Amino acid sequence: MRVILLLFLAIFIYAKTMMATYTAKYGWFGTIAEATGVYEYNKTNYKITAQTKTKGIVASFSKHLSQTYISEGIVKNNILIPKKYTLIIKRGDNIYKRVYKFDRKNKKIIKIRFKNSQFQGKETLKYYVSEDVLSLYFNLPNYLKTKKQKIYTFYAIGGRKSDGRIDVTFPTGNELKNIKDEFDNKKGLYIKANLYNKVFAGDKGILYLVIDPKNWVTLKGVVKNVLKIGDLKGGIKNFKLIP
Image (tube, rainbow, N blue to C red; front, side):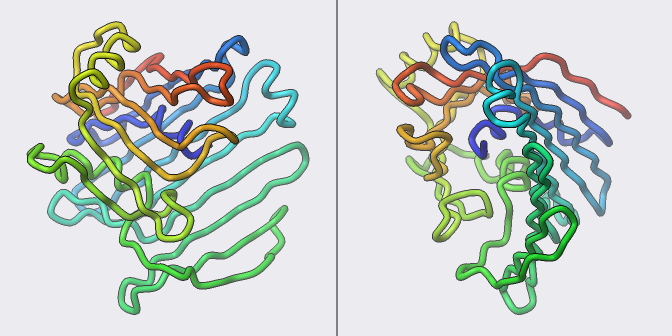
């Protein structure tokens, strides 16, 4: 579901609150998920909340799985700096919660686990990163101001399990042509993200996005050939700004 989450992300840097709704479709299953994202921002603090809920036959298979991701922190020089990243998974009657706290002074990340509100344990991650996948995405407009590099490598919670690695590239040549065809030649900036995390067994955790470069709103996204059945596709349903 980490890659599904990125299908639903959008940004409008100067809004106090942004709300967006997305849907995801997969092969002959049709619509399998819907997500809502809320981005709250001021000059000093931010909060990002993204929730995904399974739909249709997939909801039945997954015991009506829903996942909520929350990134909270401060804003410094227009960069989001997370203090805490929370993942809440609801499956059937069980609720699993993972809280990641950034100890920037000691360069550590503390992971705290709960099940049905009961404390399950605490550990220090074997690696340290300064961002989570939500804050990283919202910071990308600042990181990708120029396209001189072939590969941009970042590290964030939500990336590769061993170290948080995420690679971002700009498709070119036949790869760009093919993905533009996939997106019906939608106008925008085309990027490719490798999260090194599989959505389902069989895919490679590689995501293609087309983004409106004027406001960094994700318009469409796709994970190719999941389980060799079909592509996982996401698209924006509605978008709202609250001043």
